[in-house]
Image 1 (cartoon, chains in turn cyan, green):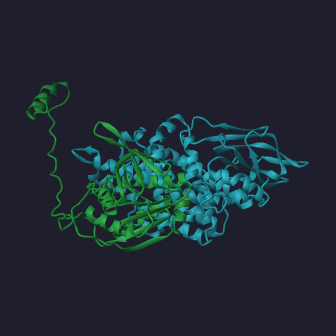
Image 2 (image 1 turned 135 degrees about the horizontal axis):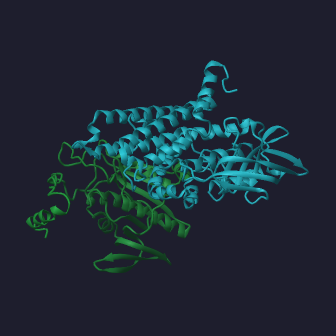
Length: 389
Length: 249
């Protein structure tokens, strides 16, 4: 490994994982150290995603890793969570790429698609030869996706789609978009291939966050697709929301990885940075910050592990995922803020990764259900009272 | 071609080594072990030969305590077909004794080629490859930086003092692998899942007599603290004087 990263594991959570889960985690951790970290800062500055690594990730087997068949690895929920953790230790944009490909694009095709759709898309997506994006959010419909304006109308053997989608990860580089739109007032999923007339992705520029990630607007103007391009197996918001449950599960683990990167950098820095003739690690206020970080990371590790066990047993509900996604993103962002504080002025440059992670996490705490929306999902479950609508 | 790859687990290279209470071994508690980096080249080369021939087998073997299973599993995940742990209770540091155990086992299995790292990065003895080849009666080429196989014969290239040596070699042979031979692959995730279904054999190592014994281990003396002679351009004369004093200039 080319970097000195030591993952925090204060309570030996490691022993809760199987040998295979640890090996998978370590393999992805090594790959991130060797292949991704050396190039991330230059891509973050340029606002580009390291596309050359897309097939390599396919060879590694991280796309749709928890799915079975069609070239997918068929891993345990915890193993696929730990993959997200390690990818996001590198950068939230990297984990986002893989989450979108696997949880938001491959999963709905695998769960709701026809056999022909599965054969056509899944093996190539698993290999990283075909990139997907997921079009649900619109500029005016984020937390309220049911209000979407994108529509499909029948025209013989075809559907004609009109509308636009916003904040779409991989939107410009994708070979296939899963576009959610209303057909006769009911939300349905449509597979729109790159190059289809009237369909285009336009990159959103000048982001402070997820810079090493393609975030785009999708525009659909009289896009004609064959009726075989609709996902037949699901109707209504349940379709996209079930995908989001999968992706949020990955985010819950992923944000722990970003927090671990923050802790590792801050702890290492505190031991080396000399102020008043001694390492700042010897100051109580600095230790207090590091202990807060370690405490929250450890709690989140355990919460994610339990969530994974519930997923494995088929007992995980969407509100369980909300609890973990909400907690992990919040604590990871706080860890980065505390870590930046420990790094002092040095922490504002990209010599250190702290502020890159911090800025990324502002997106991660917002997308796939904002912190507040998850609060209301959990609140609804606890009280039986719906405060969202 | 049936290939045996000899591997060893070694403390991770960033480990802060502590000497155990017996003064002859290292403290292993809290130490992370990893596959010896040179052995990774050996494993990768074995997998490439098997892929090139589209036939044969790759078996990884180690001599050591039960905890070595992790490194053997890693090798299975990367593509080895079978793993063998020749178990011992102690830390193995004597190349002669390890070679005796490996040779005794290799003689019981089909083997045309033995690949191993040029040395283990913990003890750095550089003993095993030649010792093993001698016991097996195999040809031996060490520190190979390039290896090609054509018509059943190997051409090996190795760096020697100021030159590159090209060696032709037939099987059976022991070849030790140098950095630059190849770029080792990552285990892919399907490989990791497949590994647990592959054969894993554990049997006691048949250790021969010891060839050497560690009498004592000690850490290097701590380095003396540095000296700051001053700041800025004004300190240059003092710096030159200090360098002359230490005969660095």
